[in-house]
Amino acid sequence: MTFEHDVCPICGQQFAPSDDVVFCPDCGAPHHRACWAEHGGCAYAQQHADGFVWQSEAPTHTESSAGRDAYVRCPRCGEECPPDALICPECGKKLGVETDSRFDFNEDFFLRGVDADPAADLDGFTVREAAMYVQYRVKDYVRKFDRIKSGRKAGWNWAAFFFSPFWFFYRKIRRAGALFLGVLLVLAVFMAIPLQKVQQQALATVQEYVTIDETTTPDQVVAAIASLETAQQQTVQNAVMRYSRALMLYFGALFVPNIAAAIVADSLYKKKIAQDVKSMREFAKNAQTFRMLALRRGGVSVLGLVGSCLLVNLVLNMIILYQ
Image (cartoon, rainbow, N blue to C red; front, side):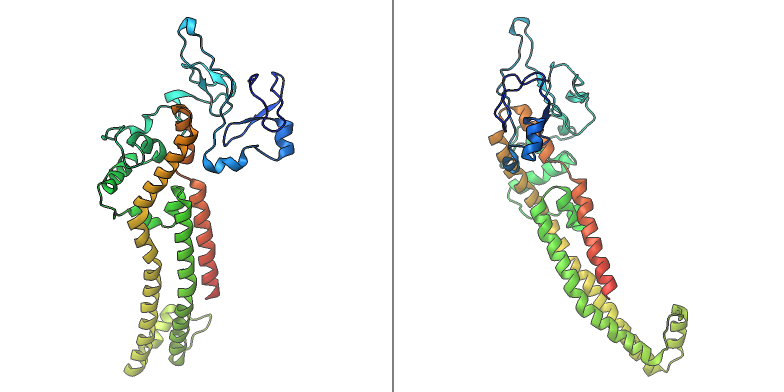
């Protein structure tokens, strides 16, 4: 495709039909390939965090004499496609409501099953905007956001309870995810210190009465304890019970952040949506651009979920090896 009315944001030269042009995957801005390589990326990279989306200065190509509708711009390559096109002729990207990808341009695609008014306000964004942003389990979250708007701030999110802090990274609430992840790791590390002391004390008590080495099996340990005198058995049992209580306290403490996460998750998610929608409204010049931003900035992040899981698994394995 050509951008005869646009210029490269790096060199300032107008594009020619024969130019080798690349497009920024974040904002869609076209660049000369050589300029992109020399600059090391997009000229608008510093504005991406604020939701910047490049807009062409080219006039809208319409055929008023034939009554033709405005063109549809391909979200992958920027090609101007006919309004009834299902596939971009330039790159093969599926367009319109027939697409099976997450970048669907039908504004009501994610409203299926939602019985609320799409234009209803949820305190900072509409039901339709929430649907485009949430994308998965829209009906449940619309109901939760409506409840929060009515004044009932406290709620309960079972997914955040069982899968915190991973749920926050999955829903792209990264700041809250980092906070809960930090709390979890701090608790896991520092609570392991007294737990290890109790474990060593219990093991030392058992070894006073039972010989344990690398070849000793659990059945042999149980049989040896059973052969002890009553007072000795009681001493061993008390040591084991102290360790069991310490172990329960350890895992119970690790669940405290999960309880807090379950209570505040919906409110934090609603707040993030309101902030992002406000930012997208400022940068988007039309409804189509807004939908593109919502579909890209919303939804879920499998990469964030997997990355946080791997980090926690690494830390817990280090704790186990340390003990």
